[in-house]
Length: 442
Image 1 (tube, rainbow, N blue to C red):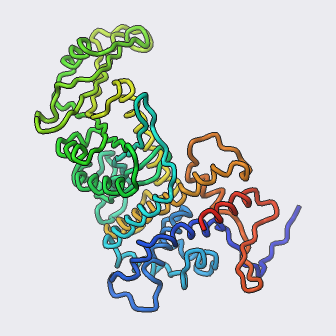
Image 2: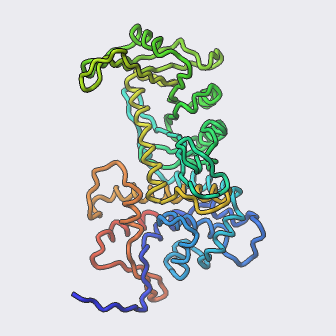
Image 3: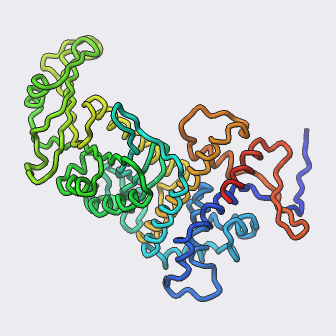
């Protein structure tokens, strides 16, 4: 079959899912409030501040991170109308206006994110024998920007030049609670106290019950533990052993811990020590040191070791569960690495688009809006099982599949009888699910 290739006059859009993104972004009052703020020397009559922010967030929701990608949508009425724009900004205008806003706009965008998260009914929980917790995972994830000379690029702990933003997620489905853009060489714990305090404010505003803060050993800090205690938060923090003796931990584990032997030559001791103080401080409330000590006298191939191999893992916590459950709760903290991957791979935001640090800080905040908007669309679509062409036997949909199935969905824009219509193909498999989502977001 040989086709003739022609160009017609129909208004077609390859991103028919933008109205879903627009429904979520247009309803954010804090984003709209930026129109009353002063950024730079913007002249009256240009695209509004909120229009600039929504345009960049919409691009990110399409998996496009470069300012030049806005050219693809300058004449796309679906893009303009979905975001309630008077006109779509040019590449130069988009870059200039975001530079003017910089990190000054990060606060209202962060508030908009909390506003967006209030639409979520189920964040997903971790169940134990005693309680159900909503996990809140925080971690630094290096962004590789090697070979560039952008402001703030420096050597990260992964030995690559780039940035090292702090990212926080809430629930088992991977909603982003907050983020903070950082230089690559900045230590994880620098500025962490203020960041966690702000995140706790967000958690309280969302009204989450039984949040569980999970952190790695970079945040083994008495000041941070005191913060969580004062705010009444449950926490689980990997301890930094520093100069502690592994042999002493083994002796303690043998004395008070429970022993399991998953195979010959390997013993695992788990338990809780209540006598160990955080940095020797007596003013902190009850804090327990959970331990897991692994003693290997034989490797997995059956080779007997001349000197036993010791592995010691310990955590600070105020949880009431048994050691094994607490350790499993921390192991589940590793799921947040998948969320990092979705931000960097699915949305494509690893190499930052601007040379200015403050602009990239704002773009990361806008990426958080796009991230959560896509997550809401993905999780909401799973509740429409009878309307979807594919059955999903998963807890959450990856952002990449949401973009492919529900954002890059072809449509035709038609004006008829004073109304603007979006028409989808006769054989569009996602039409009924898309239609119901659009109605649900109204």
